[in-house]
Length: 133
Image (cartoon, rainbow, N blue to C red):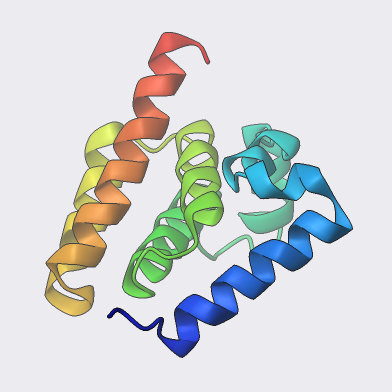
């Protein structure tokens, strides 16, 4: 006899509640969020987050690579944020090697599972950018 855990019961209840509120929520995918947020042009990122903020400070590319490192450190749980940050880092001039190295460096601090998950997401974004998706 397999009894359900409290977490499984809670998830079932949440799914039933979502179905009652809006049947479309049963097929919800977080990937849809990233499509709602366009990639900012590099000049806008520099103005808002780069040298425009502090002319002697970090540029937008470096800030985005640091953000990617932080998201990886959190266990790469925020998929939409990781994917958007990779997209924006590329727009700000980061190469695929720089993105991969940023994520790989976090293996020492966040662990291999977090690094692997972030790398999978980044690779997916970089491949979709090449394919023109």
